[in-house]
Length: 110
Ligand code: SF4
Ligand code: SF4
Image 1 (cartoon, rainbow, N blue to C red):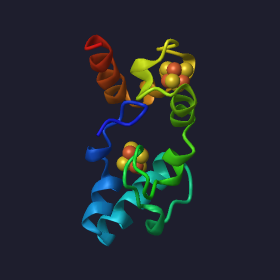
Image 2 (image 1 turned 90 degrees about the horizontal axis):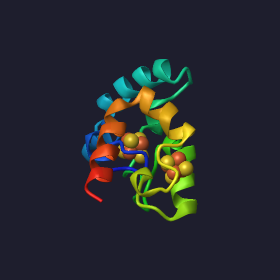
Image 3 (image 1 turned 90 degrees about the vertical axis):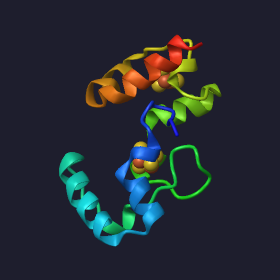
Image 4 (image 1 turned 180 degrees about the vertical axis):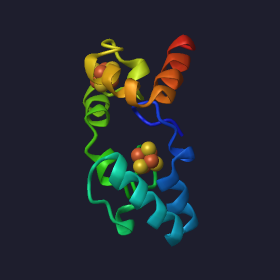
């Protein structure tokens, strides 16, 4: 399940913890992500059905600029965008190279 930004939601810890209803995993992820994002993330916030689902979304991904941009351009993900790779996406790929690789593959398959 590839998100708009190229991340694979089905491999995301928050997605897995939500599917498994795994509270101890939520505790661990909340601690890890609090440090990573320098934010106060609590275990109750670790709930996500995936970037493109109609269900629950982790707040960070829900308000993600890339997600909003893809929605406004009506593209499945950044690989389908005429402005690929824009500055916003380039900055994100530096933080998450695996997303960049996934988008490059999708782009090559076009
Ligand atoms: S949208 Fe949800 S499942 Fe996808 S990367 Fe973000 S937190 Fe993980
Ligand atoms: S402008 Fe950038 S963030 Fe927006 S859809 Fe295109 S590549 Fe993605």
